[in-house]
Length: 259
Length: 224
Image 1: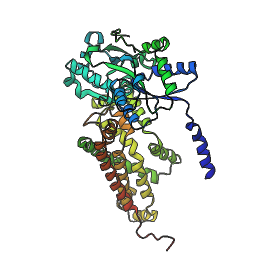
Image 2 (image 1 turned 60 degrees about the horizontal axis):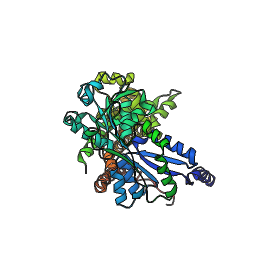
Image 3 (image 1 turned 120 degrees about the vertical axis):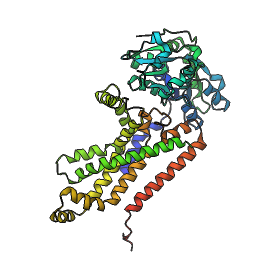
Image 4 (image 1 turned 90 degrees about the vertical axis):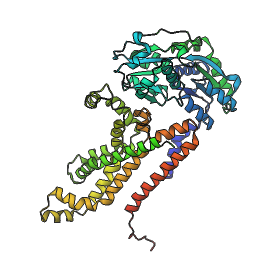
C-alpha cells in the first residue's frame, strides 16, 4: 500500500515544477497562440503553457484565484474589470487586434453566401445556427448583436444553439451538426477548418467592436517573463503570425468570401 | 433558481429511468441466465459508461450520430431533425450513459434469487418467462427500485454529455447542471447556490432511498 502511494507521488511529482508562464486565452486564439508560444519558447527558452476558454469563464476563474500569468481576452471589457479590481496591471494592457465575426458554412452547404450574406440564415435548410454562449463569450454577444442589427434575430432565435465558447460553436458547425455558424475568423483561417468550408465576414458596424486585449495578472509570480511575452507580441514576427489568423488592428475589411 | 431547467431535467431523468426499466430488465435477464461463453464481453460493454469519460460519449454522438454519418442521416430521415441539440438527443445520450446504473442492480438482484425456487415454479408448470415474472421480479423489488433510483439520480446529475451535444438551448437542452455551470461562470453565486442545494438534497434523498431499501435490519455486527 505504501509502495503504491509512493509510486503515485512519484508520478505526480513532475507537475509541481513551475518555471513556465501560464496563459489563459480566449478560445478564438486557440490556433494562433500555440504558434506564438512555440516561437517565443524557441527564441527565449521560456516555456509557455496555454489554457483556453471563453473570456467570461476565464475572467471568473482569475477572480477565483486561478494561477495564470497572462490573460488574452476577446473583449477588452474583461481585462478592464480585472484592472479595476486590482487583479491585472493597467500598464501592461495591450490591445493586439480587432476580432472578426464571420458566418461560416461547410463545403457541402448549398448556401450562396456571396449573394445572401447574413440572410442565408433565413433559408429553411439552416435548421441550427451555432453561436457562442452570449453570457460568457464576447463572440456570442457579437453574434446576437449582428442578428439584431440585420433585424433577423426574432426569425432565427429558435434555431440558435450555444457553444460553451466560440471554439465549441465552430466545432458544432464544422462537424455538420449545425448548418451555419457565427464564429471567429481565426477559426476559419486555422488549418483544421481552412479547407472545410467558406465564410462571409459580418461587417464591422453590425456588432460592437471585439477589441482583443492581453494583460499581465497581478498575482503572477513571473511578472518579468510575462511582460516579455507581451513585448514579443508586438514584434513584426508575432504580428505576422497574428495576421495569418485574421488578427490585426486596422479592422480593415477582409475578403468577404473564400473557397 | 431556474425552474424551467429544473423541470426539464426532472422530465429527462423520469423518461430515461422509465425507458431503462423496459430496456434494462431484458438485458439484465439475459446477463443473469445466459450461458454464452462470451457473455463477459457484453457485461464489460454495459459497464463501459461507468469508466468512460462523458466527453467520449458526447464526441461519438456528434460524429457517429451526426448529420454526416449514415446512422445520423437515417435518424434525420426518420424524425426530420438531427439528434444533436434536441431533447431526444439528450434522452439517447442519457440512456447510454445511465445504462449500467440500471442493469447492474437489476442483474445482481435477479442473480440473488434462489434457483431452487425457479425449479419449483417449473415443476408446477411455469414456463421460464412466467417463473421470471411471478417469482424473480417480485423477489427483486429492492434491486429494481435501486436501479430506477440510481439511473434517475445519475441522469439528474449528468453534465459532460449534455455540454457536448446539447447546445444549451433554454427549455430544450439546458439542464440543471448546465444552468449551474452558467450561473457559476457568470459569478451569479446566489442563484447557483440555490440550485446546487436543491440538487444536493434531491440526490441525498434518492440515495437514502437506495441504501434504506438495501439495508439489512437483521444484520448483526461481529462485535455483538
